[in-house]
Image (cartoon, rainbow, N blue to C red; front, side):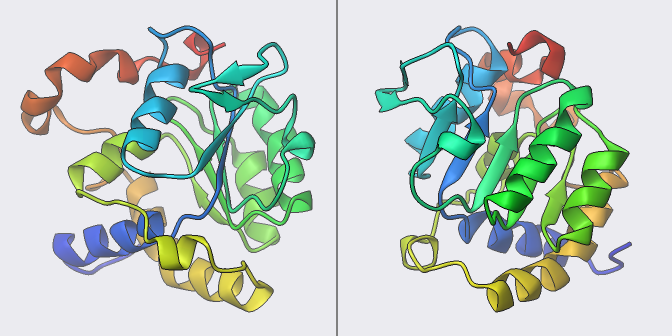
Length: 201
């Protein structure tokens, strides 16, 4: 577990999110009231490069949707998951096959098996955490110079080693998990984001 100060932990998380290249959102929803639609839409508004993955949609957020992670064209740096926990291991394997650097399971989704698959392959692993809430709270936007750079094996290994302690701390529920009540005053209008994975399909 990371034992630095809160500021150091937050900076590690901010650096990770800032470095994101292309995000493939598995389980992106066509329903505008579901977190699986709200969250990726807000990430796009922040400037992140995102591709929706939904076998039942041709287009989402004005972007052509891929029917599966394997069908996403081009590189995939981050796999964001809005699917039930039992589907996470298969998605983790697909993320490894695609050469992703980060596997991020959204709020309400935990999977020990997916974690083992991702970490064994050297991916940075995050679970039960809303990507948009963390990015918004830390005021993080993507670094286009880094996001557009090719993802190499060495860079992946370095990133995983540098960020794993901070992400492990987040899993312990310290500072970077879902925003606590006292921190959520400015997010009142965004409460639908807090729903669980089972409501996102």
